[in-house]
Image 1 (tube, one colour):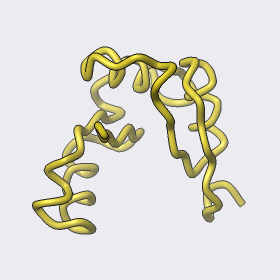
Image 2 (tube, one colour):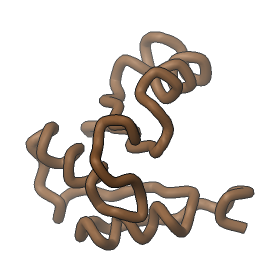
Image 3 (tube, one colour):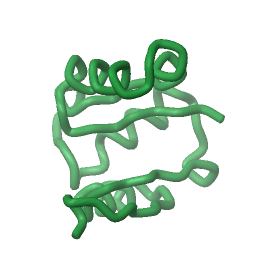
Length: 91
């Protein structure tokens, strides 16, 4: 299973958060795609399109796990299936 984090935050913040929460071994399995890497942030699909292209994936075989409705809009605009988790951002 290929894993990525696609966040509107900047790359340094995202990488640091993943490392802090998961440690080196687990965090090293994720590719990071961040808001400062794309022209338009979510709800534009740019970050998901970048991740799919960079990782050489087929959108029909991908799934996005989101915690915001803005992210859901981005995933839908990219044509990728999405599950929204309940959080303070989506409540």
